[in-house]
Length: 165
Ligand code: NI
Image (cartoon, rainbow, N blue to C red; front, side, top):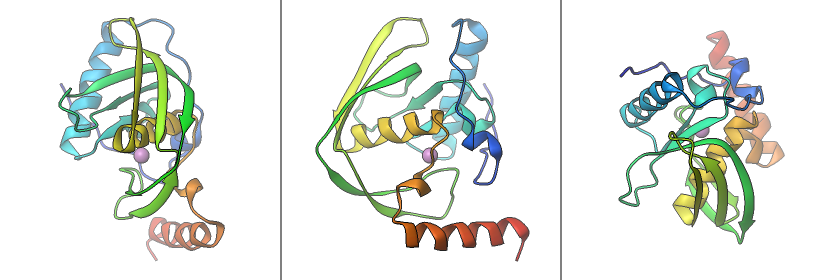
């Protein structure tokens, strides 16, 4: 098991749509174990493979529902419903939290680490985590959910930080 450094805003891997996993083998299972360890170490409730520099459609999450960490491979977001505003952050944009409105409910179909078809669904925190991690695999970031003015302000701050200003 290993803990990986988490890529932060400005790293192009976070903006690249991830590639589907073609074969779920021991290498993928080891990657998932490492992602879970990295997520808990951060600590966070979800982590997508691009966040550790691996551009594959894999994410892990633990929505504090007592079921522990689970993995989604090649997930498809099949349904969202409702609306819920909640404070949300991202390990790749450290130090920022925003009240963000998203659908309250989300349903994802995916494969797990054993190659079995799984369905993950839920409202509130579960729905939020599923949508957030799914978007990482599309190359979308939490910043894209912000109103335009707020997004501009944050992008300016983040690029100044990257330049060391
Ligand atoms: Ni994130």
